[in-house]
Length: 141
Image (cartoon, rainbow, N blue to C red; front, side, top):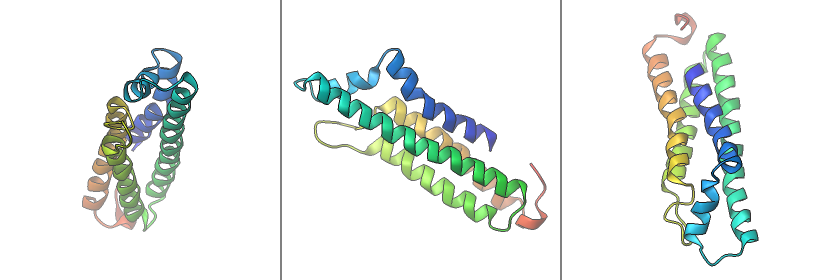
């Protein structure tokens, strides 16, 4: 579960590192809209970064809550982990497949792929939790 949390933190920080270094998100927006002025490009870039940041920070909260529930052996921890996985998988699919306007994909593919990694970790967690037996008698992992 901590690996999924770490992957989510990396996904939350990556857009900011990108903007501070190579700024590929701006290039992505400019590639879709080459005639846009700089202020519109910056606005779209910021919208993509805000979306990625807010959703991944919500993912961090989800991981922390699920880790707490599993550590406390709450009866509902398996269901909570399954719901969190479903939300993470939906986010990953949206990042990988959402297109609009001139965009082939609104979120650049590297960030869509990065968003799918915590969902894969979540799938592993859900499988382990459901195979581990009753939530109240589960061994601690």
